[in-house]
Length: 420
Image: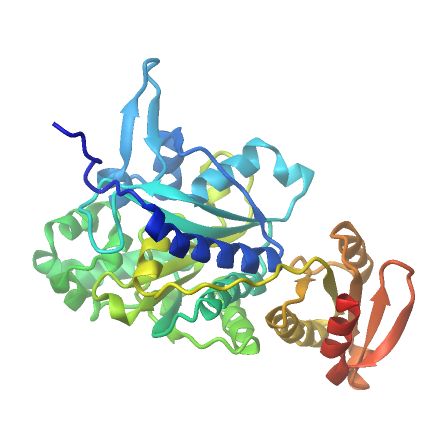
């Protein structure tokens, strides 16, 4: 009898590899353009990492994890997602102390013991970003922007960005009480899983895809009406940042995702051609996950792309985009200057210029130091005084010389200098 692959664990044959490599290479080019560095973690981790990180009442932990005990009695799990392992590596190797704010990307297989379906096997593959060490809402926007840029380069069409906020530990408990009271009269209409969730983790009901549950959920209160001041302000700035980047989105007041670690921003990208299983990418902020894993509170945000689902939505195309070797740093002073810099950031990146900006509200001196550490060839200094004259300062990091340039000319000037 010929041994076959385990159900839901699929081979990727040579004839298919070109499409996979195209998706991987396009993602690498974009993510490195945005200043993210690759990280690789083991596929096998301690089960406690996911139980504590994802939440023991989630479907992933309670139903879908491939877990077993090894010869020494240790409970191990094939990773069902990659955010918790990346943060575990960040803490274990003291990167919070060695380098602080860090940006990573990953590409690799994940494992969940669920019914195989279109675009999601038991071994599936994800590409993702994790930015650790900043609470900036503009960072949330950068991650969404990088994701959109990948899809633009792939010429993917027909997708919708859905956006929401799930609040935080201050405002979510109050909302959960309101939600429980609202749903109490309709518990018998919910599926068996959601009837169980009603008593264990009512927030998870909002993530159920059962049609009866969705009908009940549509009448339920929405968390956006119960956000605390901090969460509400953060969400407003995320919307402002997306507007600056000209990224369209649709509100989904019941978008919560299937993992307990999310706080504040959550988002999902759906592709209409894929039917009911149409989420091709998703992410959000997870400011409390570090503490759940035994570390200090470290603010962070991330996202992941489902490779199989994206490939289903694409026709393979051969593209090759050269990765820029030189880069520029946008140093800003004041909020008006930052907004202008944030607009400029997207324009430069879309022109193929590797560009960085500050996400930690640091002084100009600290920003210039950061530009030096990143080995940026040039720094564009944007101050409110210069803005009033429609100019910026262009600094050559090699010789320290600087000059004023009109805002309308800076993009072409930078491209010209970096192509020399």
